[in-house]
Length: 378
Image (cartoon, rainbow, N blue to C red; front, top):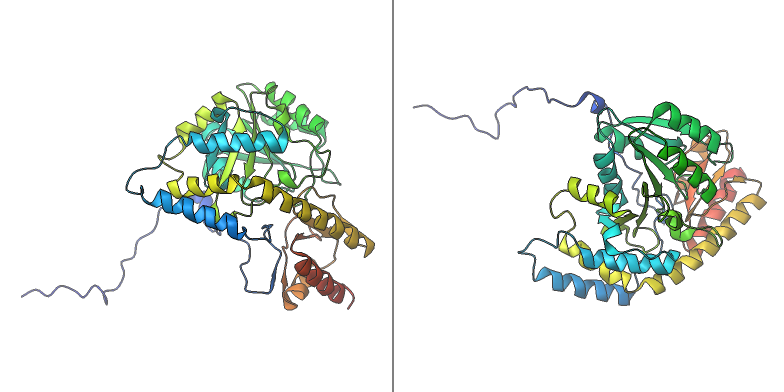
């Protein structure tokens, strides 16, 4: 009688995994997730949705739950129309629903863009320092990655940008405005210069302006959405994670020409936006006026924090986002650790010597100020 080996005690077989070479030794993306009293490290909105918004989302999700045996609306035109209505109020730009796209966070929107316009033999360009996920999108889509440099004050020199595009002939250019991790916004004239240079790239080039923090821009700073009618190769991405306080819902979206959006419809996975996600987003959008009022208070808190940091003698980048980049420190990690030891978590990211702090509630900001004063005063 043959006795089969016990699968719970059998030694595992030895076999190599065929990992792609460019993934060997890589670590997953992630910011520290630590249980401390004051979390100011990942640019979240510090205010949760109001009880009224929570109730409406819950009701909408309950309604969607009755139909979860069916696939969700693949084209989600109702949600796209709601997003278009919101942008018309927020930025003064009216677009049809067909010029809006949405996905599971702006990360997936960016991945769709690189799937549609990047790929083997193609190049994506951005200007460092900027969002650390961009080269990972390029890597994951077999797109060559080139990073130009920003100026000393974290701007983009139009002449250098033109030269870079002429040399590298990218199919995708990623501009972040307001930029992460610096918080600085690009002038529309600079964006125009890049768009004009991209129009001269043989074979075509899509310019993506990532406005994940667009709602936090200061008065008088326009959105790149105002350029969409002139430039069919422009895409402007947004998210509901920041201003709407819906980081946990994972809803990002994009505005662009119909032709550009149609390419994204080709590369997306079938039924990629769940019925629950669609219901959540539409319920939140019905309360956009309330949420935008909250954004105003966060902008004021940010501006006050910038003034305070400068008064303490720190160098601070101009910020149009819900975070502030400040420095510079000979040993920034020691400052970061000192804050953590006092229960305040911020982000050690960006250029050497700089640190980034998200705008929190007044109580969280006060805790940060007290902790920083102790650490740098030692």
